[in-house]
Length: 247
Image 1 (cartoon, helix red, strand yellow):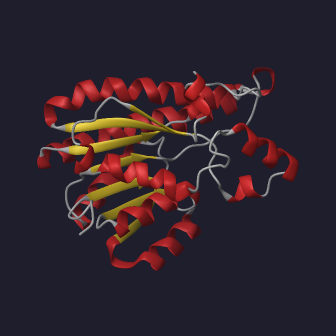
Image 2 (cartoon, rainbow, N blue to C red):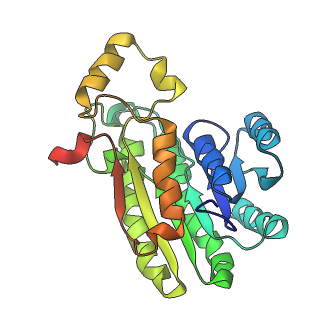
């Protein structure tokens, strides 16, 4: 028995990296999963790998019409939506003077507007099953800003933190819970290919001595998606190896 048996989930940004880890974890825990991304080739490969319990849809999260299409296809394929994971994100490490208006708006469109549109799109479907769980992926940088201060990314992740609390209050009467997850450094291919000296300094800055494995973040996301967290809503779950403990 899996903790997500009988659940239907939508996961955005699910073609690779942390998003793909969430998709795999959800399938392992018994969910049927529609995952979306703009990365079509990687998405189709993962769909083929995981089989009949998943469906990939190419999807721009900043487009409201595409969100409507995703929810409609999910309902036709697997049934009403129980879980939404707003994982899709974009961002360069640009300081204010280096960040163009175009770049700033693109980051906000994906990370902030995409999260808003996703929550709005699934409410009607979740109402039909009289409960649901929305997990918004933010960042530890919504609590503790790093030295290189990527302005657009940080603005969007602070916004996700506040939007989560607002939505949790709005949706509580429907039995829909909304929580945010705030990862610190995560061991992705990009991080593992970093300069060895920079990687060593990163490890030394983390009280637990290492970046998170993607599976460690996915375990938290699956917990919040499941009925095991049935009394948690509007809450912030830091998963950063202790980096924020001194805040």
